[in-house]
Image (cartoon, rainbow, N blue to C red):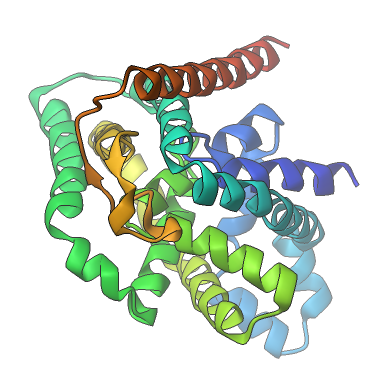
Length: 301
């Protein structure tokens, strides 16, 4: 049951932009075991299962532990998606400000993992941030289609980011312009068992599975061979997402599910609006710093 509840916390963390499920796994002392188990889910595992060696293959990949984490994470996502969808729909500006507060302090986590600071490292960070901003400025027609292939690839990319401590997979979903739709489909399916929501989540889930089988290995290889450059680029991605999360937007032209990515940035004109957004930002930053402090205290034990 302990692994199950740890999975619940990881699932909840993965829904919050700026909060890394990988960091929570590291905090709870299961990151290495989880990564080893996920890396074992390869084609040989599938061949062994279809050949009838189910028990031995499950033991080899630490399947019971992985299943407990998975079920807990699914429950955490299903439960937490309700309040997340409510605040995105009813209070998009405040939600964006809160998410910005979460992300800004958390940028330090992957940045601190970078060893040698070279010109290439700084260029990689700039490239990551520029990619996000360019996608926001010129990629909205592509984001608007959001076909099944786009949803599939988003799932593959998201699960790869979630595997890294300090890198938020949900922040990447915001960058890709699909976060609001994921949240709304989770809520719709858990309340009405909608077929369209099931298809969307199934495609996204298959993308996550593909990410586990392929992209996570690629990411691990990049981290082994080009660790500093890779971490720097990821840090740039996260930092660039602050442009998308600018809390002062024209929400009148978009539906609620698209408010996190599709609304146009504007300059605030109301003092009340500025103060309320700053309050939400401060609450998010305080929460992020609190998570980081808990992690550092756990690391000392």
